[in-house]
Length: 280
Image 1: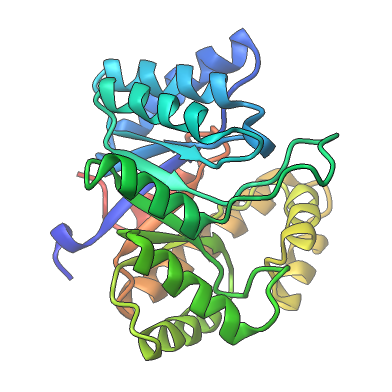
Image 2: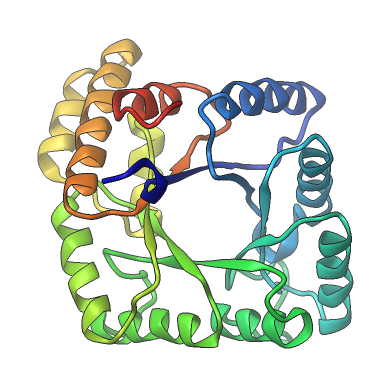
Protein backbone atom coordinates (compact mmCIF):
# COMPACT_ATOMS: atom_id res chain seq x y z
CA UNK A 1 0.00 0.00 0.00
CA UNK A 2 1.39 3.35 -0.96
CA UNK A 3 2.05 6.02 1.63
CA UNK A 4 -0.45 8.26 -0.15
CA UNK A 5 -3.28 5.89 0.72
CA UNK A 6 -2.42 5.54 4.40
CA UNK A 7 -3.94 8.49 6.21
CA UNK A 8 -3.66 8.90 9.95
CA UNK A 9 -4.98 11.56 12.29
CA UNK A 10 -4.80 12.35 15.99
CA UNK A 11 -7.59 13.23 18.41
CA UNK A 12 -7.35 15.50 21.46
CA UNK A 13 -9.84 16.48 24.13
CA UNK A 14 -10.04 20.12 25.33
CA UNK A 15 -7.74 20.74 28.29
CA UNK A 16 -9.53 22.40 31.21
CA UNK A 17 -6.53 23.85 33.07
CA UNK A 18 -3.62 26.08 32.12
CA UNK A 19 -1.20 23.22 32.82
CA UNK A 20 -3.29 20.94 30.63
CA UNK A 21 -3.29 23.48 27.80
CA UNK A 22 0.47 23.85 28.03
CA UNK A 23 0.88 20.08 27.91
CA UNK A 24 -1.41 19.90 24.90
CA UNK A 25 0.80 22.37 23.02
CA UNK A 26 3.83 20.19 23.73
CA UNK A 27 1.95 17.03 22.74
CA UNK A 28 0.66 18.45 19.47
CA UNK A 29 4.11 19.75 18.52
CA UNK A 30 5.67 16.33 19.12
CA UNK A 31 2.94 14.40 17.32
CA UNK A 32 3.01 16.86 14.41
CA UNK A 33 6.55 15.67 13.67
CA UNK A 34 4.94 12.41 12.51
CA UNK A 35 3.12 14.35 9.75
CA UNK A 36 -0.51 13.40 10.42
CA UNK A 37 -3.22 14.35 7.95
CA UNK A 38 -4.99 16.42 10.62
CA UNK A 39 -5.81 16.75 14.32
CA UNK A 40 -9.31 16.69 15.78
CA UNK A 41 -10.61 18.18 19.03
CA UNK A 42 -13.60 16.70 20.86
CA UNK A 43 -16.76 18.43 22.02
CA UNK A 44 -18.48 17.82 25.35
CA UNK A 45 -22.05 16.60 25.86
CA UNK A 46 -24.46 19.17 24.52
CA UNK A 47 -21.53 21.34 23.43
CA UNK A 48 -20.47 21.86 27.06
CA UNK A 49 -16.87 22.38 25.95
CA UNK A 50 -17.84 24.35 22.82
CA UNK A 51 -15.95 27.55 23.62
CA UNK A 52 -12.93 25.63 24.87
CA UNK A 53 -12.96 23.45 21.77
CA UNK A 54 -13.33 26.50 19.54
CA UNK A 55 -10.46 28.31 21.25
CA UNK A 56 -8.10 25.34 20.91
CA UNK A 57 -9.10 24.68 17.30
CA UNK A 58 -8.76 28.27 16.10
CA UNK A 59 -5.43 28.67 17.90
CA UNK A 60 -4.12 25.47 16.33
CA UNK A 61 -5.26 26.62 12.90
CA UNK A 62 -3.57 30.01 13.31
CA UNK A 63 -0.39 28.13 14.30
CA UNK A 64 -0.49 26.24 11.00
CA UNK A 65 -2.11 22.95 11.99
CA UNK A 66 -4.80 21.24 9.92
CA UNK A 67 -7.50 20.72 12.54
CA UNK A 68 -11.08 19.48 12.69
CA UNK A 69 -13.43 20.43 15.53
CA UNK A 70 -15.98 17.87 16.65
CA UNK A 71 -19.48 19.29 16.38
CA UNK A 72 -22.98 18.37 17.50
CA UNK A 73 -26.16 20.38 17.91
CA UNK A 74 -26.77 19.45 21.54
CA UNK A 75 -28.90 22.26 22.97
CA UNK A 76 -27.95 24.83 20.29
CA UNK A 77 -30.40 26.28 17.79
CA UNK A 78 -29.81 26.62 14.05
CA UNK A 79 -28.79 30.28 14.26
CA UNK A 80 -26.11 29.51 16.88
CA UNK A 81 -24.84 26.60 14.79
CA UNK A 82 -24.59 28.71 11.64
CA UNK A 83 -22.67 31.36 13.59
CA UNK A 84 -20.22 28.79 14.94
CA UNK A 85 -19.69 27.19 11.54
CA UNK A 86 -19.23 30.62 9.95
CA UNK A 87 -16.59 31.44 12.56
CA UNK A 88 -14.81 28.19 11.73
CA UNK A 89 -15.00 28.90 8.00
CA UNK A 90 -13.67 32.43 8.48
CA UNK A 91 -10.79 31.01 10.53
CA UNK A 92 -9.78 28.86 7.55
CA UNK A 93 -11.01 25.58 9.00
CA UNK A 94 -12.34 23.17 6.39
CA UNK A 95 -12.85 19.94 8.35
CA UNK A 96 -15.61 18.97 10.78
CA UNK A 97 -16.30 15.76 12.68
CA UNK A 98 -20.12 15.75 12.70
CA UNK A 99 -21.77 13.83 15.55
CA UNK A 100 -25.15 13.37 17.15
CA UNK A 101 -23.61 14.01 20.55
CA UNK A 102 -25.55 14.04 23.80
CA UNK A 103 -27.75 16.50 25.60
CA UNK A 104 -26.14 18.43 28.45
CA UNK A 105 -27.03 17.17 31.89
CA UNK A 106 -30.15 18.73 33.38
CA UNK A 107 -31.91 19.17 30.04
CA UNK A 108 -35.24 17.38 30.01
CA UNK A 109 -37.42 16.33 27.12
CA UNK A 110 -37.97 19.85 25.83
CA UNK A 111 -35.23 19.45 23.23
CA UNK A 112 -34.68 16.67 20.73
CA UNK A 113 -31.33 15.32 19.65
CA UNK A 114 -30.30 16.27 16.14
CA UNK A 115 -28.93 13.12 14.54
CA UNK A 116 -25.65 13.13 12.70
CA UNK A 117 -27.22 12.65 9.27
CA UNK A 118 -29.36 15.74 9.94
CA UNK A 119 -26.31 17.72 11.04
CA UNK A 120 -24.43 16.67 7.89
CA UNK A 121 -27.37 17.71 5.71
CA UNK A 122 -27.63 21.01 7.62
CA UNK A 123 -23.94 21.81 7.03
CA UNK A 124 -24.18 20.90 3.34
CA UNK A 125 -27.29 23.07 2.95
CA UNK A 126 -25.68 26.17 4.44
CA UNK A 127 -22.00 25.74 3.54
CA UNK A 128 -21.97 23.55 0.45
CA UNK A 129 -18.74 21.62 0.00
CA UNK A 130 -16.54 23.94 2.07
CA UNK A 131 -16.11 21.42 4.89
CA UNK A 132 -14.77 17.89 4.65
CA UNK A 133 -17.17 16.01 6.92
CA UNK A 134 -16.29 12.93 8.95
CA UNK A 135 -18.89 10.98 10.92
CA UNK A 136 -18.82 8.18 13.49
CA UNK A 137 -19.11 4.46 12.74
CA UNK A 138 -19.49 1.51 15.11
CA UNK A 139 -17.99 -1.84 14.00
CA UNK A 140 -19.40 -3.51 17.13
CA UNK A 141 -22.65 -1.53 16.70
CA UNK A 142 -23.84 1.47 18.67
CA UNK A 143 -25.21 0.49 22.10
CA UNK A 144 -28.55 2.16 21.28
CA UNK A 145 -28.94 0.57 17.85
CA UNK A 146 -32.12 -1.44 17.23
CA UNK A 147 -30.22 -4.00 15.16
CA UNK A 148 -26.97 -4.58 13.33
CA UNK A 149 -28.65 -3.96 9.98
CA UNK A 150 -30.31 -0.72 11.12
CA UNK A 151 -27.01 0.68 12.39
CA UNK A 152 -25.24 -0.04 9.10
CA UNK A 153 -28.11 1.60 7.22
CA UNK A 154 -27.95 4.59 9.57
CA UNK A 155 -24.28 5.01 8.66
CA UNK A 156 -25.26 4.87 5.00
CA UNK A 157 -27.72 7.68 5.71
CA UNK A 158 -24.89 9.84 6.98
CA UNK A 159 -22.97 9.27 3.76
CA UNK A 160 -26.08 9.85 1.65
CA UNK A 161 -26.50 13.18 3.46
CA UNK A 162 -23.02 14.27 2.36
CA UNK A 163 -20.37 12.82 4.69
CA UNK A 164 -16.94 12.27 3.13
CA UNK A 165 -15.55 9.66 5.52
CA UNK A 166 -16.17 7.89 8.81
CA UNK A 167 -14.10 7.26 11.94
CA UNK A 168 -14.91 4.17 13.97
CA UNK A 169 -15.29 3.60 17.66
CA UNK A 170 -12.15 1.86 18.87
CA UNK A 171 -12.06 -1.94 18.87
CA UNK A 172 -9.54 -4.73 19.52
CA UNK A 173 -11.09 -7.50 17.42
CA UNK A 174 -10.11 -7.01 13.77
CA UNK A 175 -12.69 -9.56 12.61
CA UNK A 176 -15.42 -7.25 13.90
CA UNK A 177 -14.10 -4.50 11.63
CA UNK A 178 -13.74 -6.78 8.60
CA UNK A 179 -17.30 -8.10 8.95
CA UNK A 180 -18.57 -4.55 9.43
CA UNK A 181 -16.83 -3.44 6.23
CA UNK A 182 -18.41 -6.34 4.33
CA UNK A 183 -21.85 -5.25 5.50
CA UNK A 184 -21.12 -1.61 4.62
CA UNK A 185 -20.06 -2.65 1.12
CA UNK A 186 -23.27 -4.64 0.71
CA UNK A 187 -25.43 -1.55 1.28
CA UNK A 188 -23.35 0.54 -1.12
CA UNK A 189 -21.05 2.48 1.21
CA UNK A 190 -17.93 3.26 -0.80
CA UNK A 191 -16.39 6.15 1.14
CA UNK A 192 -13.35 5.58 3.40
CA UNK A 193 -13.92 4.30 6.93
CA UNK A 194 -10.93 4.86 9.20
CA UNK A 195 -10.46 2.56 12.20
CA UNK A 196 -10.36 4.43 15.49
CA UNK A 197 -7.37 3.26 17.51
CA UNK A 198 -7.18 3.45 21.30
CA UNK A 199 -3.71 2.80 22.76
CA UNK A 200 -3.68 0.93 26.08
CA UNK A 201 -2.02 2.53 29.10
CA UNK A 202 -4.50 2.20 31.98
CA UNK A 203 -6.52 -1.02 32.03
CA UNK A 204 -9.01 -0.04 34.75
CA UNK A 205 -9.98 3.19 32.97
CA UNK A 206 -10.15 1.43 29.61
CA UNK A 207 -12.36 -1.37 30.97
CA UNK A 208 -14.75 1.08 32.59
CA UNK A 209 -15.04 3.23 29.47
CA UNK A 210 -15.36 0.21 27.17
CA UNK A 211 -18.18 -1.26 29.23
CA UNK A 212 -20.00 2.07 29.03
CA UNK A 213 -19.63 2.65 25.29
CA UNK A 214 -20.05 -0.91 24.03
CA UNK A 215 -16.48 -1.46 22.81
CA UNK A 216 -15.49 -5.07 23.49
CA UNK A 217 -12.18 -5.97 25.06
CA UNK A 218 -11.73 -9.65 24.16
CA UNK A 219 -11.55 -11.94 27.18
CA UNK A 220 -7.97 -13.03 26.53
CA UNK A 221 -6.83 -9.39 26.43
CA UNK A 222 -8.70 -8.60 29.65
CA UNK A 223 -7.10 -11.58 31.41
CA UNK A 224 -3.63 -10.65 30.22
CA UNK A 225 -4.04 -7.02 31.31
CA UNK A 226 -5.51 -8.06 34.67
CA UNK A 227 -2.49 -10.26 35.30
CA UNK A 228 -0.22 -7.19 35.34
CA UNK A 229 -2.07 -5.63 38.28
CA UNK A 230 -0.64 -2.17 38.92
CA UNK A 231 2.46 -2.74 36.79
CA UNK A 232 1.83 0.18 34.45
CA UNK A 233 5.05 -0.36 32.49
CA UNK A 234 4.06 -3.93 31.57
CA UNK A 235 0.52 -2.84 30.69
CA UNK A 236 1.86 -0.13 28.38
CA UNK A 237 4.41 -2.47 26.76
CA UNK A 238 1.85 -5.21 26.13
CA UNK A 239 -0.71 -2.65 24.94
CA UNK A 240 1.70 -1.01 22.51
CA UNK A 241 2.67 -4.37 20.97
CA UNK A 242 -0.96 -5.49 20.81
CA UNK A 243 -2.24 -2.30 19.16
CA UNK A 244 0.70 -2.18 16.73
CA UNK A 245 -0.14 -5.74 15.62
CA UNK A 246 -3.82 -4.83 15.32
CA UNK A 247 -2.94 -1.90 13.06
CA UNK A 248 -0.66 -4.07 10.92
CA UNK A 249 -3.46 -6.59 10.46
CA UNK A 250 -5.88 -3.83 9.49
CA UNK A 251 -3.45 -2.35 6.97
CA UNK A 252 -2.73 -5.77 5.48
CA UNK A 253 -6.46 -6.17 4.88
CA UNK A 254 -7.07 -2.83 3.20
CA UNK A 255 -7.74 -0.30 5.96
CA UNK A 256 -7.19 3.20 4.52
CA UNK A 257 -5.46 4.50 7.67
CA UNK A 258 -6.20 5.29 11.30
CA UNK A 259 -7.61 7.86 13.71
CA UNK A 260 -5.71 7.68 17.01
CA UNK A 261 -7.39 8.56 20.30
CA UNK A 262 -4.27 10.02 21.90
CA UNK A 263 -5.75 10.98 25.30
CA UNK A 264 -3.52 14.07 24.95
CA UNK A 265 -0.38 11.92 25.32
CA UNK A 266 2.57 11.62 22.94
CA UNK A 267 3.19 7.96 23.79
CA UNK A 268 2.24 5.28 23.07
CA UNK A 269 0.60 6.73 19.93
CA UNK A 270 3.96 7.99 18.66
CA UNK A 271 5.58 4.58 19.16
CA UNK A 272 2.74 2.77 17.39
CA UNK A 273 2.93 5.08 14.36
CA UNK A 274 6.69 4.54 14.19
CA UNK A 275 6.27 0.77 14.59
CA UNK A 276 4.01 0.83 11.54
CA UNK A 277 6.54 2.78 9.49
CA UNK A 278 4.06 5.58 8.85
CA UNK A 279 6.16 8.44 10.22
CA UNK A 280 8.24 10.45 7.77
